[in-house]
Image 1 (tube, one colour):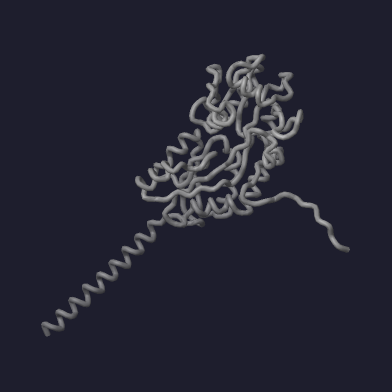
Image 2 (tube, helix red, strand yellow):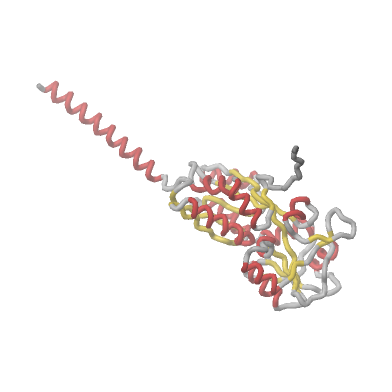
Length: 308
């Protein structure tokens, strides 16, 4: 009888342990609160891409009603700092992570990083419509940025420090030279547009996605307040080009930059789902409709001869 009681107790304890294990497993499973089809995540995005990323998020959430992607728009440098913020699942900026950043995130958060270029954008130059200037070459652009241009134009950015536009201009145009102290900033890209609209001796540097969508009613209102200045083509002698899908994809427009996502996710969750969406057909079409250049799919039109 005592032996039977002992066996019963042993079996009961083993069973209880298995049930507890099952409950623990289910509890851990439930802690994975997001999948590509449900849940909430936070992402940090370079403010200069706000129009097109707003559209990407809107379409994704519409197709996946159980999801919520909360976007914090900020200067690029602030986005990259969020690589070390555990609650931020994705960064969208104009460059990939560095080896040092990858190691720091791996050591601190025990998670890997993955990045992909999903589109190509341009830095557009805008001026007040009353200004007679019709085009510029890159030598003149550099002189404006140095404060040496003959008309003493004031460069205006979406923030004088820490933005992707400022970093791109310093790296790709000034190439180590000093930005003029006369340079000023709007709080946002829309702030730059408003400043240029009210100032004749200024020239704005903003992401093309703010003024390039011909079908967006808000951007059409912007283009009534400012004009885009064409630049001398990279390839054509004497020719000038405006930023646009063709000039961005061919490289004939001289101020082209990448749009990159950096993903940090320990499981295949909502971050992966949104990343796959942006790099897939529907997301790439959204970039194309926003007059950026999709980087992962080729939508170019080719002539074909049909046999009769």
